[in-house]
Length: 426
Image 1 (cartoon, rainbow, N blue to C red):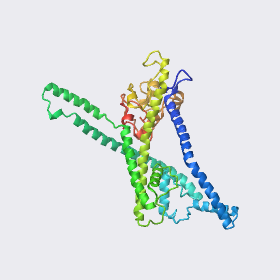
Image 2 (tube, one colour):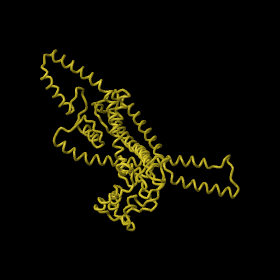
Image 3 (cartoon, one colour):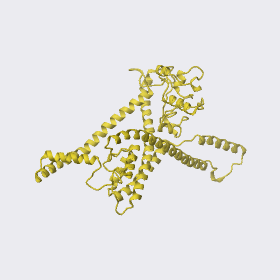
Image 4 (cartoon, rainbow, N blue to C red):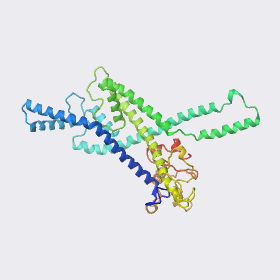
């Protein structure tokens, strides 16, 4: 690829996508180390206390009933095996009747995987591998389609509010009508120019993130009220369960709707409410995670810009260097974003294609060209596969510009050109 990032004075230039990937990997490693340090400081004393308390109880029980430690350990191992099969001290709902199995497959395809129910037979384990492969893929597709519709609805609502605010702003002050032709013409031209701005207006990713965050909090708070009343959990514990379940972490330490019957509550209504809140919560959190990923990418691009600053001393003059190319796949904050010259599909095409738009004719690229030039990214391959699927190439314009989401796959591709920060015209 043509674009470069990193210092060219040292070990050599680095591809921008690779630089972003390495920077994100470094961030995740540091994030994991910090998280491990915090949880170790918070939870290790409790773990030691529980271990000491269990050792004392084990010694006391073996002496009181004159049991050998070996026999008692064997008995506890047998209970652990029964616990895996769904046997508990308290009476709970059957694991593998139809309703229990439906709850299980729901945790499988949603990738929550609480772990309180697992297949014990060879046939069940083999079937789970194939069942989960198709089910998880279909559910991820459902989440992506949900994200697409949520982003569209939010964008329409925010644009409507923006237009309403804009219309109020352009009204003549004090209710006066402009009578002079010159002034009227100037006002019309001004309205026309602002109308063009409205046509290309898109909501900011921060507004969408705020709305999705508020929706996720609202769903979690309402669900926590239901779980606190039905399960007898504390409200904070219920909020903890909601996040673990909605984010599909699914530890399994707390699992809802496991009793045979709920006293004082309509059991069927509670189970339906549990299904509704988990489905809605997972969709909201999934959408929120993907929008937050855009913000993280903005930060990474901002850091890359800062890391590139020392390298500018290598060039005697500011401006376009003959051997440097415009940055590709950049989604940066507005005050750091600079307009680039239009490209047809990607900057890689401009660098590698010289034979009158051969790639834009819909012709498949060869693997030899891909391996030799390394300038055709995943978006191009996805575009061509899409063209083959629909039987005709998609229309493209020379004014189309590439960003970090154009032609993307999955959630990033869905949010392409729907938000201000992912728009190709920013």
